[in-house]
Length: 252
Image 1 (tube, helix red, strand yellow):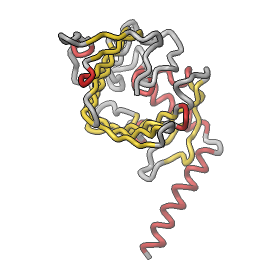
Image 2 (cartoon, rainbow, N blue to C red):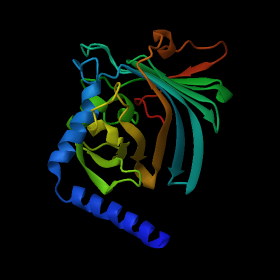
Image 3 (cartoon, rainbow, N blue to C red):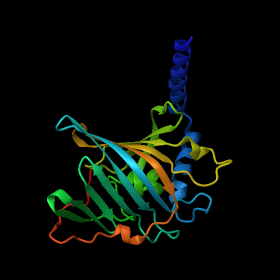
Image 4 (cartoon, rainbow, N blue to C red):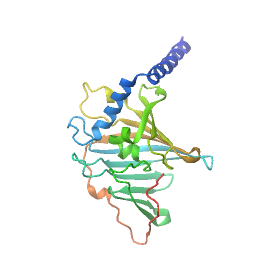
């Protein structure tokens, strides 16, 4: 009996995913709109997401080395002001496997490697540029995903918990990102009875060159608590070398 129930549940997931992928364009449009709206200028107080603090768990497969690396850490983001004049800022810190910080004030990004006593300093693509080479676009560019990517249902279109899965292919070719997959919280389409906004992205997978992929899952998400701007500016510690690569930001 238990085996039949499990089999039925698995079939339901597959059939639901097929139905979505085979033509529910209206639902896809609603989902993308619900995902983008909280991060766009002019979003109302009941839906706007101004800042995020969370933990993350990461699995990175290095295709060129055929090796899997796991890590975790914490992240803080300010998504910009209501006018759109202030670019997103972020603080991304790895605690494992090695300590590392990736910090941006919206114009410059610093990648600090304490064990090497080095910080890499690079310009960040601006919001009015395509910005597809930014591997954190799934975090800081959520208000413009449908402009930068062709969005479709992933296969399957739902995960076992019923959350939606999307595939995003860059509209402009980029050496950094072949495509993205996002798991979007089903609560994005369930507004009734919600006390406030919900962070839409539960999980992101970035597929890059040489069959590499980076999977990031967010945990313990806290929204709209306010974050001091000083957190997004890096002060170079004494004895740390500043390196300025010729290319723009390419973390992960």
